[in-house]
Image (cartoon, rainbow, N blue to C red; front, side, top):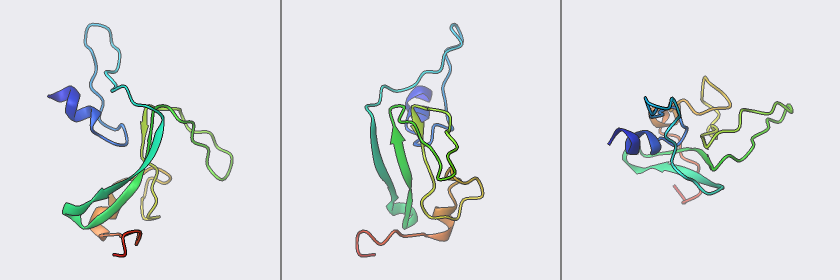
Length: 99
């Protein structure tokens, strides 16, 4: 259950570790980019970058390549460019669904 719950974290902040090998137990994810939506919070969330896609900021800074990353798209994160969940408390909506 711990491995599954950690693997469901879009940003990769939750990671399960194999105590015997010291290796991260990451889900196998194909390279893809999606949008996180949270109907329960009435909010639109971050981008969801999966499968080790390199991310480079507008300033040219190359971020660590990770299996899962959640760049902020609401502009409210205090941890930019990474999502910190502020979109949920602000009930930020992207307007893509007409909402």
